Amino acid sequence: MSRVFKMSFSGIYKMYIEKAERKDRTKDEVDEIIYWLTGYDEASFQAQLEKEVNVETFFAEAPQMNENTSLIKGVICGYRVEDIEDPLMQKIRYLDKLIDELAKGKKMEKILRK
Image (cartoon, rainbow, N blue to C red; front, side, top):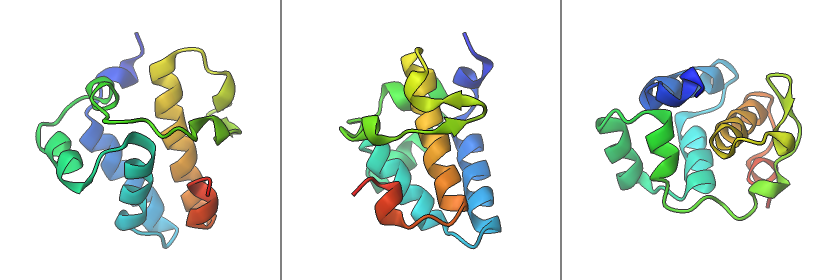
């Protein structure tokens, strides 16, 4: 099992926010991406952060992965996200890819596959 599965999601979340803010994007935009991808709302997401759940639990308890995840394509960390076989790793990389797109200045409509 990958080491990343056991990492605290709140720690990774802080890194996502820092990455976004370095590129003049906002915590609210990071949150919007997470809500879109996972189906969490503000209250349920905050509860997960407060419980300090690991990445595996965060995705296992996600209310509803977005039906448009299949539209997320491209390379992240040297891997094509659409070709990743492990379902959990693929979810993690989907989120990484979306945050990367945010940091690269893409418009939210494009990031959220609207």
